[in-house]
Length: 355
Image (cartoon, rainbow, N blue to C red; front, side, top):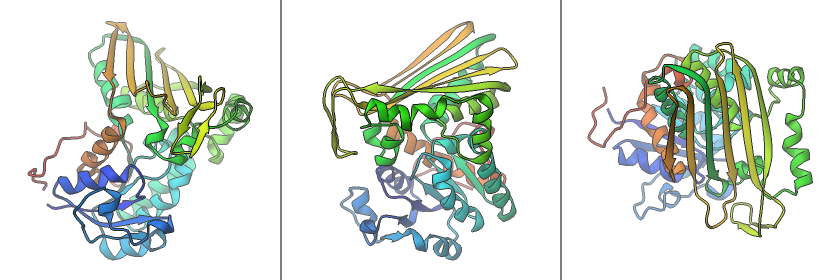
């Protein structure tokens, strides 16, 4: 079966997702973006390919009509990091009865940060018999990899993870969400202050869909769900990463001056009924020339195990996971299904035959 895929959002990530789809032997039949400057551009330019494909980027205003007419096998959404910011695009997919998978980090496990919108999408998708999924780098490197290690452990006391990534690789929305380019005073007002609240206030924000989760907030929820743990308390703290010298950000189009925030570290700590503590940290910032991505997780218990992924190519791993998940979402039950309910994504070559 030759899959027919639509790309929504033709920024930095789509360069890889579209190429990976085509190299699997599947088809990109449409591409959409809100930026009018990208309308009419052949996807080959987005992919930096010499071969033209005859597929021009269309305005997002045409997205719903296109889905209703063409009924693709799946849509790849690579736009924003917060669930509320991508809700409209996922709602359109759900209403049209078209499967969708997104790199949106909060969409990885949105029921613990924005349950109202999660339930809305889930309800619509069940009515129209399609599947909506969030996936990407965290699916394996913050999720299934850790769950697999847990499967070789007799007793777990604590799961501790730390991962870093360069916000330059993901676009301006993500960089700004991490506070990159802010003064420390502005960082405290715009980023850190949102976590200096009571548990009751946080729960109220979550129920109102106004909570701003760090990426690990949703990862901790996913890990607990996968491992059969029950979280009784969860908190997060966002701390600025400070420039030791001036650093130019091409994404922000500015010099981040010494003493300003290059991004942030977000630490999420979860206590569970079972006594297992999950403490995860993600560091997203504008990298200095000598910095690189890292990913290290430790399970403390009997036995204790540490696994390190040396210099992961986070962007490419994100996009490859998304594309390899597409057959899973096509075969999955209807609704908003988080990947803790799936098996590991499979590797597909351009010769792999799909049923």
